[in-house]
Length: 413
Image (spheres, rainbow, N blue to C red):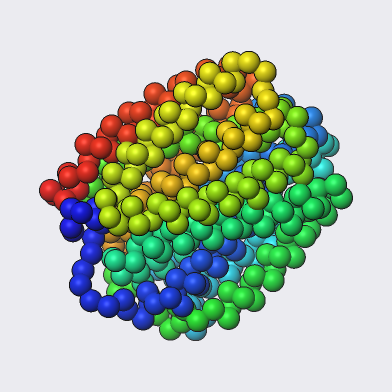
């Protein structure tokens, strides 16, 4: 591992698996998965708030996403079993996409004003399908991406997710929000159904045998025997405190500032997706040049400054301009951390337990960050935005300092 890069490298040309065609497939998989994820994270809270639901109901949406971070419970099944004819990991991706299609149709039968708990229960099931897809795609990347392509693959996957946010915001929410919840959810279901056929045609992951030494459920947290993985987890949790909190507050801030669901979607998903797309592409070469931990440190300090500034701005009445800037900067910072942390993480995962190791890290990280987002949204009406952001600024500062100290420690092990 070269100190200048902060991620593992080796000489030689990219393998067939890490050619541009495979990277393009990763972008589409990131896009297909994030279409549903972006709708749950942004669209569902917007409709609920617009229907007059209190902040504790909005917070339940994030709590209902807990299955997404518990994917480590079934990730060993993803590594152990798969249909080689279709593709070991591809078969799980397709299964998750079919499940998402059905559940979106179920969501369309609900009403944000009358049946919020039904919607939230369906979201919980939807997150199981999405978690299965996420673990499968992550396992595929760990197994196939050469070390020199990890930052690029991670950045482009995140870019696909950002693009999905922009399209969901423009096509499903901004243009269709006035037609109501059922039309939006049904339209998304049709798009997800179409993506199933595209995934089946993508030229990747066919004929791969199962791992020679399949992972067991007992070995789910083998990853954390590696000191590097434990240190990365601590850094990512603290750096992400401010990002997670702002993520949970976005929908509440936009609606309370006076935006309609359609206009809030335009800012949060369309403009936010464009900012996020640019963020990952700009950050990726800095990860390769200066190292992943250096980038995480800069992001952590950026989050702390951001939270501190808006803690002061939100002491007075929310303005529409401040709310828009809040969401856009939060999107940029959220996606900026992704290429750095995932490039490091892929180097710590074992090839025979690729999905399991990646899911273990995501679960451990996600439990904390999702709790921050959910609790923050739940308590926003009681504690106020400013107080919550001030606490988050302290946590992100600690994360940035830990990341700065970790720059050389990773290479020293």
